[in-house]
Length: 137
Image 1 (cartoon, rainbow, N blue to C red):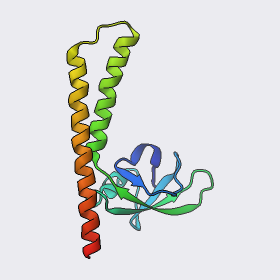
Image 2: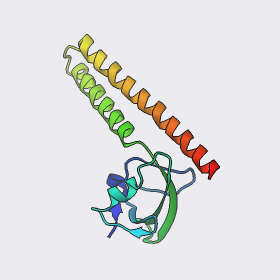
Image 3: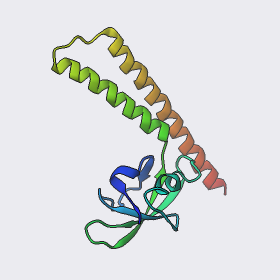
């Protein structure tokens, strides 16, 4: 049981100092057992950006279970960054093969960069709001 971190953990930022390596398997999320099918939904949890999630990992190197705390991120932001990377890769390929890069290509990069920037701002604001909520509790 469990799910591999190298392909299933998206939208989760591990706190500094956590011991996390590709190939580690998540066996529990917030003290509940997970498998590769239930892992993505468990990681999303309440879907509140910045909220804590406790991951119990089975370490690839030792087989031991280790518990770490991570914070939920913005799935939309991660997807937007992925899209920006794909657009930039298309332009890079055009340049490598001496194909023409048009002003429209550059405008696509600029437009997607704006999307990423706006999502980043919203992510930061959501984290700040979450901190205020925690402090008020």
